Amino acid sequence: MPDSQNQLLYIDGDFIEPDSGEWFESVNPYTGKAWTKIPRGTKPDVDRAVAAAREAVFEGEWSTLTQTERGKYLFQLADNLESRAADHAEMEVRNNGKPIREMRSQHEAIPDWFRYYAGLADKISGDTAPVHKPDKHVYTMKEPVGVVGAITPWNSPLMLATWKVAPALAAGNAVVLKPDEKTSVSALSFAEAVDEVGIPEGVVNIVTGYGPEAGEAIVQHNGVDKISFTGGSDTGSYIAGEAAKTFKRTSMELGGKSPNIVFPDADLENAINGALSAIFTSVGQSCSAGSRLLLHEDIHDPVIDAMVEKTAEIDMGNPLDNETEMGPIAFDDQFETVQSYVETAIDEGATLATGGNAVSVDDCPRFFEPTILTDVDNNDTVAQEEIFGPVVSVIRFGSEEEAIQIANDIDFGLAGAVWTENMRRAHRVSSAIRAGRIWVNNYGNSSYAAPQGGYKQSGWGRENGTEGIEEYLETKTVWVELNDKTENVFE
Ligand code: NAD
Figure 1 (spheres, protein in one colour):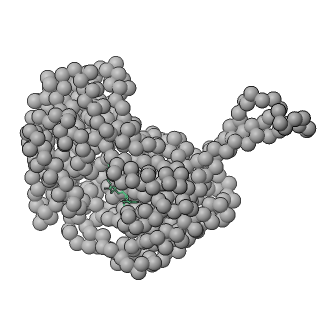
Figure 2: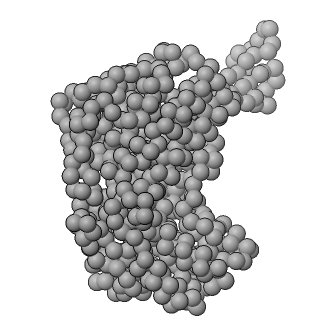
């Protein structure tokens, strides 16, 4: 860290104070205490960062490197991040209160994301086109989009930034990253890693600050070629509209309300464990949380009984303890949102099978009991809206057709899961659900090698895998005349 109290922006290879001369506090959700200060980046900082990024990507050393040399930088960055993984995991826990064991596994995986894209850097190539006109050699080139504005949320801060920065750099772009204002510290430490491995100045710039200030300045900037956004659907919709004014390329990783469907022929023990981890991992603060649990009527009651029993065993406590399975809810406004959704559910006729209450653990008032709501109708508010907390809405179904109809009767399409021992059914239902990622007899897995993204209002574009790098490339087509003399250009 450049300074344990006042953090610094990273622009054009320098750690600098924000133009505003202002910092705001980063508060630890578990202790309720501020632990560091984040620079309030504003438009002048974004202007500097974008200018540096344009210079780097179109004129600087970065633009002259071979693709293999670019990849080598990313391999070095991966090694550096590996040495920081333990520190970064702790930072994230102080940022958003998620359990250390989850954050540790994310940060142990981040270096491999960089290695995967480092390896892909020199596999990017164009093609030849067998055009219908004679004597022409036509080929395509894959070129970086240019300057990428990456805007990320608070729930898995550096992991979600990695999913953008790693492929963007491998494709030859420069990046201006704005992490969420509440969870920015890991991105500033990432800047140190970038600096230590000597990635040329201007290639990576970190501008912290508020969404409507620093974020909006990036989205509206003429010098930014692409916005890669992860966050809520309302924010995404607004950003997509702003970006469209200057025809920026966009990719949108947005919210979800994923159906987790358990058929009567499932291995119920696996399905029950899967349903619990689908919603209570990360205190439900995950875009792909299994927040709609669809249970077949024949197994509904025994599955709920078992879930209620197991829920009572979930360890809530200090998120820095290895044993803790659920920490506090990250922020006060998020906490109030969760509470009010539970009240709405009960008003609309749902039954509280377990949970539903705020609890104080170790004097921290921001814990919320793992909550299971039964008798939910798919039209109810808690079935249709993203809660982003430890609350699962359970919906009964009677047939495969009905399960598919309920699963798809929603504006979101981020993910879903199917639990069954019948492989024909597993593939049928996977194919029928309109969502970007389906798990069969497992829940929540992701990998650098497997693309993911949203259907419908969960967004567009894909992250991870080879498709992830395509988001950061333009295709140029070159027509070459093979005849020494062309006869009639007006033909
Ligand atoms: P958010 O939309 O409030 O904020 C996300 C980012 O956008 C932050 O950096 C914020 O500062 C910035 N922002 C806000 N207003 C802006 C504006 N006017 N212009 C530019 N930037 C602006 O989201 P959040 O509450 O931080 O995150 C939770 C949401 O993210 C949930 O809906 C969740 O489902 C979604 N999410 C999606 C994925 C995915 O991969 N699909 C992953 C994680 C989270």
